[in-house]
Length: 53
Image (cartoon, rainbow, N blue to C red):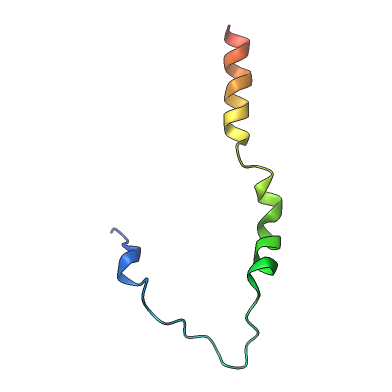
């Protein structure tokens, strides 16, 4: 089964009217610890390749 996001991109967001909608910067802060891992795999590969030479 394949998933095509373009089929749902224009749908309205059906949130509850009384539910708090988290601000974008608050949501970003939740995922901030994962930003430290960005590029981690490339750095590991650099070290491994340097050891081979």
